[in-house]
Image (cartoon, rainbow, N blue to C red; front, side, top):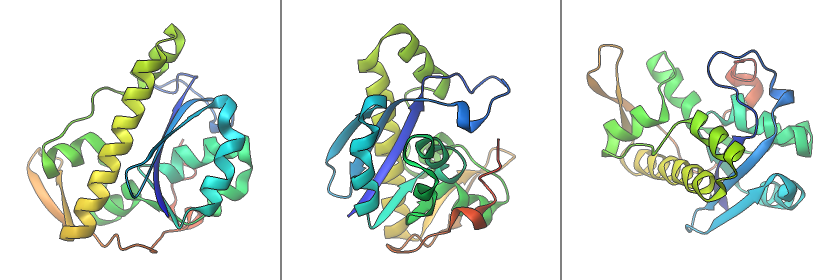
Length: 190
């Protein structure tokens, strides 16, 4: 079964702070399977995540090669980086020559925006506002899933070019295709 995921961290990695992916701790992770079933994983739940990742036919996310999977590896070991994965950001980056934000793709493609920013999730965690943290993360997973499905079904997604114009880019996100992390060049992004 294909799964879609996104993680949020306890540590603030935004705002130009110097950090290492090995220093980041998961606050919350949202997972949605291809049938729409939502699953919650808090930091303490990471051991329960391992069989779900290993049993997935494909793990789909946005910037998972450069962020999510390396942070998950802090808990489950580096072999998780080599499970079947599709990083939508890497696929679009290869086609357009820059790394667009998820929000820019979803807004241009089907008119839906994210409900916040990564720094909001860190603040939610620090404030103990776990309901807002969960809502923010799961919404990102829903948008990622919807973007994947749109691209799979239509063969393209839309994005804003560097001048702010909406453009289309062809994508080929068929089930079973992947780009291994070592070929993506994204693991050393930070």
